[in-house]
Image 1 (cartoon, helix red, strand yellow):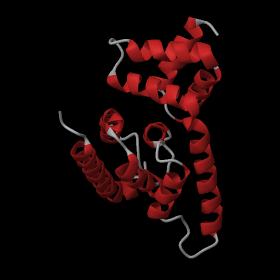
Image 2 (cartoon, one colour):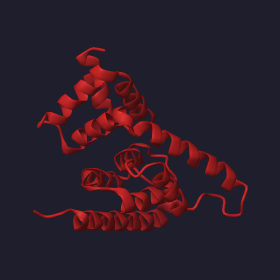
Image 3 (cartoon, rainbow, N blue to C red):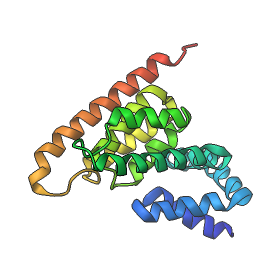
Length: 194
């Protein structure tokens, strides 16, 4: 794969959402050593935005082994969805899903928050589960991603698009922002000072 191809894919990973993002992520990870070297260059490039460098580091980590536990965890959550649809509850409980993510690996926080941002179709219970998981396992690396998520929420990229759900959506996203702020406070209090 040429540098031009990798540049195009990386730009797509930074700028796009949904399937376009997922396609770019998959292609960059599949580029193996060439892709990893390219991502390391992007990570070291001070001209890149903080969020672009976050994506580069997250994809490098995915190449180094975090992608398999993430996809395994998401498959298990998919099975939970099938089971709970047949129950009065209808959807999995966010705290149960967060526990499932943690059981697969406590080191998935960067991938979880990246996919929370990039996959705009996550239902609210899964978004809540992601924030709960991040509250237990995230470190300072997610703070740049939280800034991007907040920016995207303010742009209206996340949440229900229908006017009838507008008020409920506003309340939900206020709660999501409060939860992100609590995670931010937890991370800062757990970070040793020199």
